[in-house]
Image (cartoon, rainbow, N blue to C red; front, side):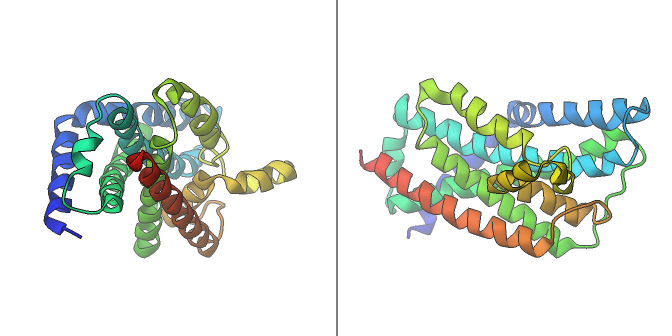
Amino acid sequence: MNWKTFFAMLARDGHVARRNLLPMLLQNLLQPLLFVFIFGRVMTTSGIMRPEYKTLLLPGIMAISMVLSGIQAVAMPLITEFQFTREIEDRLLAPMETGWLAVEKIVAGMIQALVAGLVVIPAGLLLMGSGVNLSFHQPFAFVAVCLLVAFFSAAGGLTLGCSVGQTQIGLMFSLVLAPMIMFGCAYYPWSVLSAFPVLRIAVLVNPLVYASEGLRGALAPQAPHMSMAVVLGALLLIDVAVLAAGLHRFHRKAVS
């Protein structure tokens, strides 16, 4: 492992992200914050939804923002570099093993996912106004969930970026990301699906469920949520599986 090369590539990705900070934030945060404003401010202020819904909603929006940001930060550049600009060929010539190049992309994606997620908290509090009761009395659980969710999103972006062609990007959002968001328990707790027993079991394959429930348990423990032990265990298993799949796909794509 050539750490100097690794950190040089990481610094290069950081420089690119800083230069595109505003477009990146708009791309990743505009839709989640619109949901925050409409459901957390307009509909609660008008009385259509109860004020307590604000506290329930914000952790879920944070989970969506982290997952979308990490996936897009890794997948979209990979699709371009492998299939259009061929820029990946220059990076593969760097003096370090191919697998570490994939790890560097995951680390860069994790950083972007963490930034996008943390920005949601002050922005959401500002948009929702009073009545949001977040708790930071479980810092270790909060940090653990954030890191595991960021890792999943970046490793998932690696897997998708090495599996999807340029002509299939729209299909990726329609068939993968859209169902993941709608059935990811971001806008509602998992417990409310008890009225739909089959769906309640089926959504457990969705990693966003554990991200939303974990952040809800860490930030709003008074709201219904899954056991933190179950959340952390599931996220850890998902991270390992997605990392193995991503590294395998990246190696095959790089060799071909």
